[in-house]
Every structure is written in structure tokens, then in C-alpha cells.
Image 1: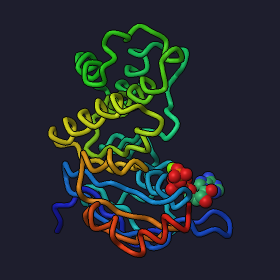
Image 2 (image 1 turned 30 degrees about the vertical axis):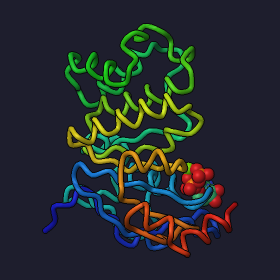
Image 3 (image 1 turned 90 degrees about the horizontal axis):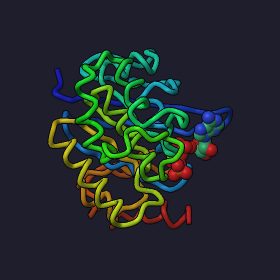
Length: 235
Ligand SMILES: Nc1ncnc2c1ncn2[C@@H]1O[C@H](COP(=O)(O)OP(=O)(O)OP(=O)(O)O)[C@@H](O)[C@H]1O
Ligand SMILES: [Mg+2]
């Protein structure tokens, strides 16, 4: 019995001899935003991959809305309501912005009338007929987010969407993520930019070399000796 949306229990993942996730356990409630932070190579993207289905955990369970989803392929998890953005945005460069959203929308048989509101949300309504390859990196990140939104996720996994953006662009994305959360979409937001994270959530999980070092408020995390050591050790 649980009101949780997502639950990871005892998740392990290794690549060859390298253990990349080591006993990762956490929960996400419906509509909640959780920050996922840690030094480079600490396993943040791998965590996103194991939840979205790009990778399967070696041990442990991933439960979504009370169902074990460990063995489901990515497209089945997307249909259940899990989607993600990519650290390097994945867009079809030769297709227009609208066509990119349409491809994702078709995969879940989204009503085509829902596409314009998504274009408005991501601020690309005015560039809907441009080819995606001509967009700035910021716009490609927004389009990648729009592609994920077209599958109507209950849980959105956001991988370093803020990296390389200027303060004005970060501001727009922070406001957008808050708006999506207010609509009931839960999020795991992987981010190195702690100021950005601080604007959208208090609750963070800190990974260090594949282990959970901390779970709690961002403010407490920044004073935790183990967390500080992990960041300094990685610098
Ligand atoms: N497909 C793979 N095959 C082999 N090793 C991998 C693979 N994916 C990730 N790794 C390794 O696993 C570790 C964790 O990688 P991961 O991408 O999850 O880190 P991260 O926390 O997202 O780092 P960053 O902040 O640089 O994005 C790293 O040492 C990485 O080199
Ligand atoms: Mg990463």
C-alpha cells in the first residue's frame, strides 16, 4: 500500500567491473519535484536510464504506480507515464519543430489538438515550422522537453537541462518546470546548477560514486560533510 508514484529499492547497475549504481533507494510522490545531484560520473544519468528503461537494473526493483516495471522496455514505460529529456537533446534535426512533437504524440495517440498548447508551453509556437537542426541549443532542449511532454508523462526525468544556458534562459525553464509541476507532473531533475535547483525544489538526493550519500533539503545537503567531501574529491 503506497501513495508513491515511483519507488526504487536496492537498485544496482554495473558496467563491466565498474559498479555504477550501488543500492539506490528512493521514492517520488505524485507531482513532486526531486533534485538529483552529484559529481560527474556519480550515476545520475544512469539512474534516469534505469527508470526510463533505456537500461535495466542488474538487481533491485523499480516500481511505478504500484507496478514492477524493471523488465518493461522504454516505449511501454512511456505509455505508462514515464518520459525523459536527454543530457544532449535528442531531436530529429531534419524535421520541423511541430513534426518532432507529432512523432512523440503519435506514439501515445495524443489528440493532435494537444500539440499547439505544448508548443506554447515550451515557447516554440513561433518557430513551429522551422527545422529542428536550425534551433539554438536552448531551443533544442525545450523541444526535447516538448517531445517528452507530448507523451503526457506523470513522471518527467530531466537530465541537465540548465547546462550551458544563460540566466534569462534558465529563468524561463525554471518557471516552465514549476508550471508543469503545478499541473501534477512529478519530476526528477538532474542538475549541477544548485541555484537553479533551489528555485524549483527543496528536496534533493545526492549520489557519490553510485551510492546515495544524502536525501533531504538542499540547504542541509550543502552543509553535509559527506556531500562536501564527494564534491571536493571530484573537483
Ligand atoms: N553505457 C555505459 N557503458 C560503460 N560505462 C558507462 C556507461 N554509461 C555510463 N558509464 C559510466 O558510469 C559512470 C556513471 O555515469 P553517468 O553517466 O550515470 O554519470 P553522471 O552522474 O550522469 O555524470 P555527468 O555529471 O558527467 O553527466 C561513469 O563512470 C560512466 O563513465
Ligand atoms: Mg549525466
